[in-house]
Image (cartoon, rainbow, N blue to C red; front, side):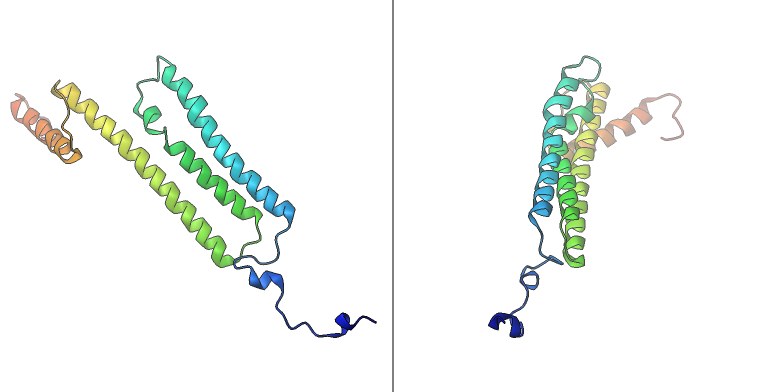
Length: 165
């Protein structure tokens, strides 16, 4: 009889010392999580460097604001999605899994906000160039003011004002 098998276990298990894991993650779980995260980064790089680059070189869609706006956002969004997928492969506690999910949602909302702001800035620039023909101001607030004043002055100049005026 071994003396170690008779003693009660007084030290906590390793999994209680590792914060955030429900049980000890094996090498296969860690490798799967790393692979999923790497795939997320690679998909983002592939979309950004290959797909968007080819679309920018295309004559039909090279001037689309959405193509230019998605340039850096695609990498960040796909990495966040890869991080979420990697967290699903690990045995995380409910609290840590909730934190990861909420963090990914925040990053994706940030990406959507940056994308939408780039597209809207391009639309304002296009409208201002089309309506006046002159250059843009340096500040977004000046551009919005110019856009609002240009649309209200066009209502005053027209002989038969539209219902929106």
